[in-house]
Image (cartoon, rainbow, N blue to C red):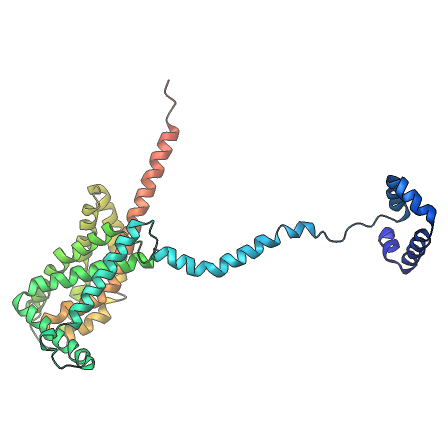
Amino acid sequence: MATLNSCFSPASQLVRRKNRFSLSNSSSYHLSTLSKPFLNLNLAAKSRPFCPPINTVTENKEVAPTEENGDQDEEKGPVSRITNNVFDINSPDRLLNAAIVLGAGSLAITKLLTIDHDYWHGWTFYEVLRYAPEHNWIAYEEALKTHPVLSKMAISGIVYSVGDWIAQCYEGKPMFEFDRTRMFRSGLVGFTLHGSLSHYYYQFCEALFPSKVWWVVPAKVAFDQTFWSAVWNSIYFVVLGLLRVESPASILNELKTTFWPMLTAGWKLWPFAHVITYGVIPVEQRLLWVDCIELIWVTILSTYSNDKSEERISEASEVDTGSQLNEPPKE
């Protein structure tokens, strides 16, 4: 503290100014400076007390450009990240997934909007948009009359594929980095099993409860959420396990683990939806309404099923690694 006070006190500064003025006017000082430069340095060092540096500027000069570059990267980061995530030419899987999503979406929108293309002569764009929903609904009803099972299978296959894609995006995957095999498995289950089985189940449920009294709707909802939910959840998990080429013991273990949690989870969603299903909607259009709600339910089912599968794979790999480490060295 004494050294710092001597450096910054007014008296010491005044003495140093006088010394510098007297030395600068002396010719002998200039001669000694020219002849003995090292002596001048020693005298200068001895004439003033040591003042420790308060702050070093040279240490921050090397960090400042890095911070500026980091700020520039952060400013350019979001645009570059979006561009790299969507239009990365070095990722063929991403490009293929983008082509599948954009192609399927464009095809669906085109089919829905061009339902009346044979009658477009003289139509305005407003008229095309006005009559498209009504005429698409009429075409759907005609398909239900001519090919009821195949139409419902197609709807369920689309819903289960889209639902699994939504589940993968919900799990944190980018939009165009989804697992195509996993989405194909879910869509295959929806197409081959859910559409056809649901068609016959709703007819069976109507035959089981033919009356129109008030208590029939709650009875149908209770039957649906006990018998049919248990059967369909079991079919879904077993078939997905077979498509993943898992062992029967692993599939049975997954079914035991997930049966009761998934059944009770459905009670938080389906009873409210099925009040409309069995109380308002005709039997032939029920599957379309149910498939709209299935977008939420398939997201839950697919996420839960694949999480359990990944947990079993990681546990099996940990067990294999532990067994290899515990093995005695071979001589």
